[in-house]
Length: 224
Image: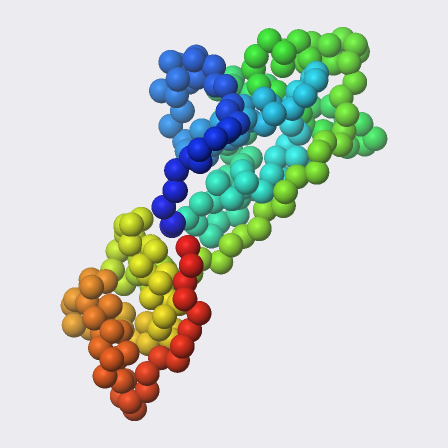
């Protein structure tokens, strides 16, 4: 995990969050996925223009940033997590769901439980408002492959400190993959499960040469 570099200077867009979210909702939500979904819905609804403002479940299933956030640090399937988070948020009353049948298909609309959302649902039920089926095109969710050296660290040493990630990625760009794998194995065999120990092995091989005197070829330097 790379460290957050901080918010940039100059003009930055902001999303207003109702005070009631912090005073009441924040203390109630115990599931991280529900919290992420709630914040994402507030952000997305605020960015929309006009009336009514909503997202369909199908649109959320294609929201790349949200899906990536729901499975951050795992290799899991984001859709079951998303659906569970939606059920939790609807049951809590943070989101309102409206199911509309059209052309033999049932469309699930989600609104924030605020005056505008409640008004829109009432108008749809009274036949005064017809909702569009197709929403804006969303950025697809792309599963990113995690660097091998980070996985090896967690498998052989333990929980990865965020500040160490950049150093590990630098090592992955400097030394052959086979060397890194073997160095971790040696550390485990010698009961020296520390990155400093693994790093010293790699540096020694790079300086003195490995078993056959081979040294790492020039490799592309890691750039964060």
